[in-house]
Image 1 (cartoon, rainbow, N blue to C red):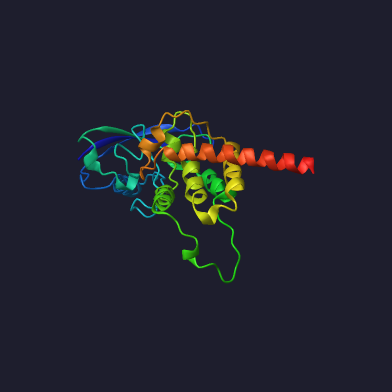
Image 2: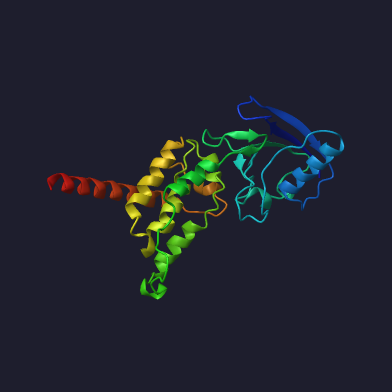
Length: 256
């Protein structure tokens, strides 16, 4: 298969950048999109050119590192990660535009590589459960219903790729943050920090410069893990609950 690639090239953060047209030939239809880019780079290096920078790690749809915007779609035409997008998903001779994820919170470092550590900082702000060292309670002493377990696990499968942010017209990170909050706040182990967790994560999300959610729904449609938009509703409810409890606690302290 043959393709014409319009690849975003950017030499350093803050560079204005430009599109570069690259012709690729004799690509196996069963090659993944990243394997095709590997071939492009091998050819460019052999010809004395510079390689196109892009992220990848596991190449098994697990890590979320391979985040590319392909023809305006996060990860490409299928609801999978970029490494699971295959060249058979495109027409022979097609022109394909390849870009980094576009969001103010995801600055471009070089070419197709973006800094998505803003998502890490959201998790660091509250995506954990504190516990003491030493002997712990018997796990079966805190039973979890099948419904709760399913809700938690359906949210926990988020791989943090950022496709939801790239797909959102507002550049919101509500699906990501909602998944992280839902995962921990519905479990009994997460109840002690339930209120502080959601407040901290929402405040960090806003501080990173992500946009607000207006329920377009593109985030869920682009998510390679098919996380439901329901987690955004859970996030909103948990945040309102936490704010109410904080106000009640403040009034009680003032009254005393």
